[in-house]
Length: 550
Image 1 (cartoon, rainbow, N blue to C red):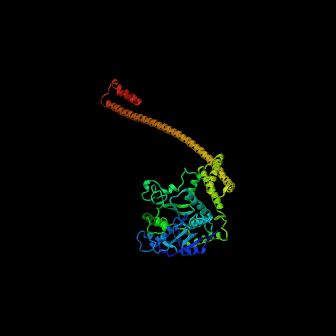
Image 2 (image 1 turned 45 degrees about the horizontal axis):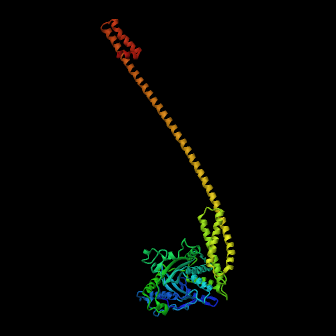
Image 3 (image 1 turned 90 degrees about the horizontal axis):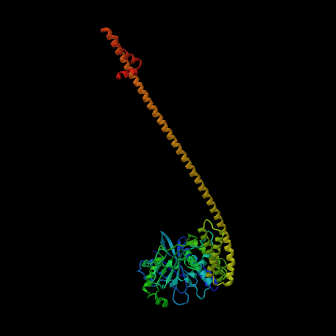
C-alpha cells in the first residue's frame, strides 16, 4: 500500500525567454527525502493541451486513496474532493511551463524494500511560445530523470507522432552526460520504460481499449488477431528504409514499450473542466490504467547505466546536468546546440551514421567468412545512399548548406568506418582461408590415418589367417602322430599277444613231449606236425598264427 503524500507541484526546470534553468535546490529537496532508498519517477510528456496534468493528477488521487482505509471502487477518479493535485484545465492556453515535480514522494514496498514514487509533469510540446530547442531540452531532461515515461497523445500513433518522438528521443540519447563513477548506456535500450497513452482513440472496430505490449492484449482482443503495439510501433520489412528506421529507433531506445488505448472523457471535461460527469467508460479506463502503471510489473526503479540509483546518488547526476545550463546562453556541448537546425543536423547525422554502422555490422555478421572487395564496396555505396535518405527525412531545417555539410562530414566518417570494416573483412577472408587450409590438412590427415588403419587391419587379418593355417597344420600333424602312435601301440600289443601265444605253444609242446616220454614213444610221423608247429611259433610268430587260423 502506498503512503499518503501531502505536497504541491514545484518547478525544477524553468524557461524564461531564451534561458533554461535547472533548479538544483528544488530537485535536491525531493531526492534528499528519499536518501539511500531507491525510487521510480513517472513522467508524462506529449503535445500541449492533451490532458497530461489531469492524467497525472489521477495518479495523486489514486495514491492518496490507497493510503487510507476509506476507498470505494473508483471514487478517486470521479471525485476530486479536497485533494490537492497538479493544476489542470481545458482551453488552448498552456498550463504547465517547464517541468514540475510533486514536492513529496509517495512510498510503497517492492520486493520487501521501501521504494519512493515521484510524479513529474512537463510542458506540452510545440506551443507558440517555446522554441524547438527548448522543447528538446525539456524532453531530454524529463527522459533522463524518468524511469517510466508516459507519452500522452490523441486519437492514434501516426508517422508524424513517431517522427516527433524519435527526434526528441535521439536528442535525449545524445545528451546522456558522463558522470564520474557512472557509465552512460547509450543507444538501444538506453532508457527504461515507455508507455504511449492514446486518448480519444478512434479505431474501436479494430482494437479494444486497454493495454498492449509484446506479450499482452486486452481481454477480447485475442479473437481479432491484432496487437496494436506490434502493428503500429514495430517495424516491418516492407516499409521504406527511413520509416522502418524511425520505428526501430523509437522501440529500441527503450527497454520496455507498451500502449494504452483509452476512450474520450466527455465534453464536460474537455470544455468546462468538470470531473463530475465523466463518461463511464472513460472513468473505467482511468481506474484501470493508473493502478496498472503503479503495479509491481510496471513500477520500474530508476537506473543509470543499468545500475539502480538512490535518491542521494541521483543528486550527483542532476548537479552535473545543471552545469550545462549555467551562463546566459544555452549550452553548446553535446546535450544542447546553438539552434534547432544545428541540433536537428547533428541528430540526423548521428542517426544516419548509426544506421550505416549498424547495417554494415549486420552485413559483416552474416558474411563472417568475408566477401570480395567488389561486393563490400557495393554494400557500402548502397548504405551511403540509404543513410542520406534517412538524414533527409530527419533534417528539414538546414537546407542545401546542411546537405552539403552532411555529405562532406558523412563521407569522411563513413569512409573511416568503411576502412575499418574492410580491414575486418580482409582479416575474415584470411581467417577463412586459414580455416579452409586447416580443414583440408585435417581432412588429409584423417584420410592418411584411415588408410594406415586399413593397411594395419589388412596386415593383421593376413597374419591371423596365417596363424590359423599354421595352427591347423600343427593340429593335423599332431593328429597324424597320434594315429601313428595308436598303430604302433596296436602292433606292439599284437606282438605281445603273439609272444604269449608262442610261449603257451612252447609250454604245450614241452608238456606233450614229456607225456610221450612217460607213456609211450610215438612215431616220428605222428609227432612231426606238432614239432613243425611249435618251431614255427617260435621262429615265425605270425606264421604260427596263420597256421592256427587255418
